[in-house]
Picture 1: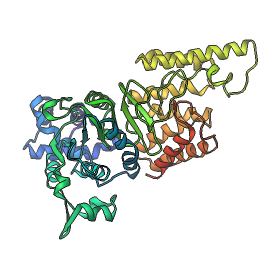
Picture 2: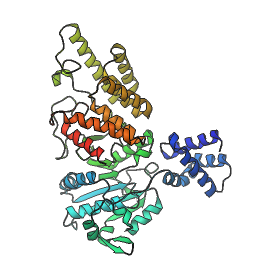
Picture 3: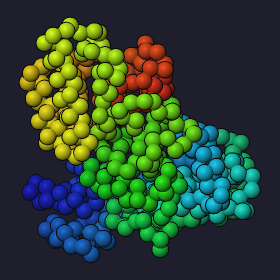
Picture 4: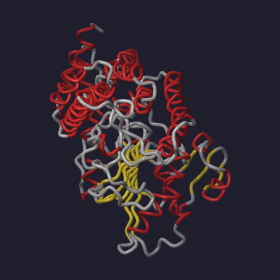
Length: 461
């Protein structure tokens, strides 16, 4: 296959599927394209390119390409930390909030063969003794129609139970030779249908995709380009009820704007809530009196930072600065940094970056402008540049926890596990030195102990 032809095909697939295709994916992509051309009885790569460029062609090819280029694999109670969070905090809160309507709507997006959707049904069965008076929807969707058919059967092999206790398996499944068959009572509580997160329109009442209390979409966005992630997150937000929760895989929404969602740091995970108010859930951290009540998470464009007079800090290191010109310069720097964050939050990214560069030109040893520039680089998908900027931040400020965690996530995204662990370990060790109840800069209302627990959970994934 000629390089020019391969480049054209790669560009079309990325644009039409939303997948993030990197250089390290080239070998797999060539293999997949060759297989699809053979299946379509095409010998000319230009023919396949024309097929992908047509609306009907990409509609028929999208499922095959996404399935071939991603991993459609899951297991029961995957990620014990997130399931503990749902069992102990999120589900009880949603049940309490919806007590009057006696209605609960849950969507497991990209559900693979159904393990995650059925895990939620089992979880609700454990929490609610009597569901007969409730109208409960648990909906699982996936682009792969073969997996949907498997999910509807509710029959699994030993491999699907590596995250589930033997006790629960015995309670909800019956062994049949070398497979396990799900209890009909639980199986009937989950509805499955094919769904394309990028191509489908939702909210949509015809497909039941509306007014969701909880959406799970885990280990999907890691495969997708930033623009596709933003589009899907916006659609999720519109599909959630006010106060509804979106749960993704760890770190999957770093570097993405959240629109109408608010990020919440919990010890077990970060979750995202559709909320105008910063405190709809009882399990959330209580807001404090600051100029930016919304929590900020690494890789997500931050609210305006707390001004120095609010924190009691008057110098770059938190120590009392000298009066006169130095003090006036410090106040001017704070004001300009605040303005840069405001530009970023308003989507005026060029102005935000221009303000950062102006501050760096005057004082190249200040870490925060580099950090904001790193977030802006992540948002536009320039991850190599973001990595270099975060390294600069750490060089200038060895105690910059958010930079360590952000860089760790970028390493993890690139498959560099050892480097990710190193960054997260450093962040954890730094956090251990701080008072647990100390609010952490760049993390809104979240305290050091909350972020510490989150960092430790990342290290134990």
